[in-house]
Amino acid sequence: MTELRRAFGAPLSALIVFLAGVWILGLIAAPQIIMIEQSFWTMQRPEGAAELSVRIDALYNRLDVLALDHAAAADDAARAAIDAERVEVQGEITALEAQESTPVKTWTLSNYAQMGQAHLAIFAKTILASLAVTAIAFVVCYPIAFAIAKLEPPRRAAMIMLALVVPYAINELLRVFAWQMILNYSGPLNAALGLVGIGPIPFLESGTGVFVAMVYAYILFMVFPLYNVLETLDTNQIEAARDLGAGPLQIHRRVVLPHARPGIAVGCIMTFMLSAGSYAVPYIMTRGTADPWFTQLVYNRFFQATNWNVGAAYALSLLVVCTGFIFVMMRLLKVRLKDIAK
Amino acid sequence: MSGRGSGLILRVYMALFFVYMFLPLGIMVVAGFNAYSPPSVTVWQGFSLQWFGELWADERMRSGLRNSLIIAGSVIALALPMGLAGALLLGRLGARAAGLLYTLMVSPLLTPGIILGISTVIFWRNFDVAGGLFTAILAQTTFVASYAMLMFMARLQRQDATLEEAARDLGATPLQAFRRITLPFLRPTIATAAVIAFLQSFENYNTTMFAIGGQHTLVTEIGSRMRFGLSPVVNVIGILFIIATITCAVVWAILKERERGAANGASA
Image (cartoon, rainbow over all chains, first blue to last red; front, top):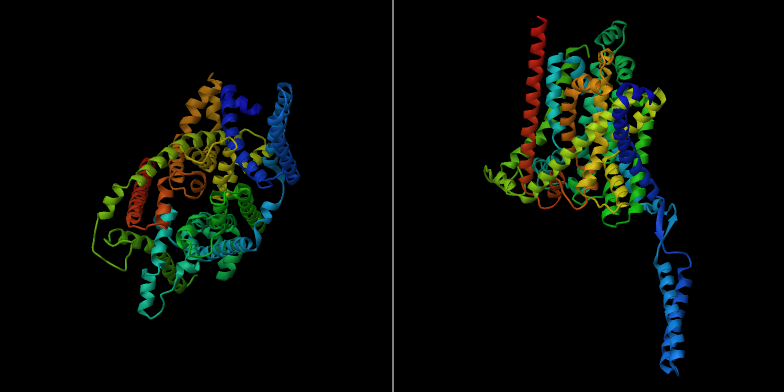
């Protein structure tokens, strides 16, 4: 902090700390903490609510009796006494009723237990499918990234990457929509299959469409990080390995892949996170005809069932899995956070 | 891979990859000019520009565009100063504190977008603020500031510290040194960060969808059009996006080329 003050002076330092503080505490940390907190409690009817209602009923009876007494009372003094008691009873009823109907905040794990068999299956399916998307993306992209970075002349490589920026920069929704058209029941793919006497196949309704579109939508998030690291690989290293008698497989296993670790980590983390957290792709591809993606369940908890506590628990489960994946990748590939976020 | 054969296989493979990347976009473009609705390339009813007209007359798309621009402008105004503050702070802290702070500041980039949207809405509900443009702006700022921070950090690492020190030795106050030395040095990055922030905000769907409540942006509106009541108006938007992207890419390539030319000219 003293270093900060020395470098920027007191007013500017204060502004820097304020801005960074609002961002880190107010926008990043606080909402996450509140979400975690919210996932561990629920509003419940207070304990002993049944007993309370019996007592309230008894008090209402007492009121009726007092009303009768009031009508039968002999003089004003007696009536005043009864009136006083009626006010008192009425007050007691109001207090008890408030107590009965005010839900109390109860700490519980039940929000997580709500997930049940069906939702747990969707949760597992979402994660497994996302892992599969990640694996496919890596297998498809590795040769592409290697070919562009190491086999093309630099000028051409730059042009190719620029061309790939076009589909990369076009909105995810529109790219997914293109596949929705292609895989449609009356789309071009089914028309082509029809020519050879197959189909039509309900790609969208079976959930296949979600998978296909997801690979398409997120595959470029694998290409760019892989290309970036492979570009920095010194071609002399490959030549040296070859001169020393290494075959293509060995070169990749011993030279190229170890060098590419940070890029592999970034690509896999991005692809997995985007797939597992994707709302757009399943939303557009299935139109509700196939099993939902886990993100859709989360959305429904919030905005249709309006149970925010359960929604928070679902969202947190997803976050835990994604964070876990990041740690596993960092451990497996022996990279640090600094290497990833560049 | 030394052989010519495997080189050819890689070439073919790469060509196939490009077909895979661009063919779907081509199909979307073609259907945008087809008079037939819902969008299709298998049923052709003739070339038509009618969907461009319908998009122009679409009130919800226009209000969505307006909201998108409001959000993007606010996100730029918030995220750039915050990201810059984060980057400046990082450079002046001890290793351990910087490490922790860095982890916190990049964490939004490693968090699924829907979580950022949800947590923001949950947080502000405690202050009786419902989902809307305001929460969408804050939720997007959370991660856009991370991008800005990384870009500023990369630039600051290349700054020549002696310049600032020289200015201070010559009697400049810290504020003057920052304004006259550091800020001009950062200017190109500020411009790039603003463009990136704009695109990230404008194109965002996941975070916005969960944070925006009953409001809509251009992209969330496109999303609901794709799900309900399909019309080639969506394809027309796709065509416009593609044209805009290609234009940007070409302009960028030309600028880059000119820069290279200038550098060569200077060195020659």
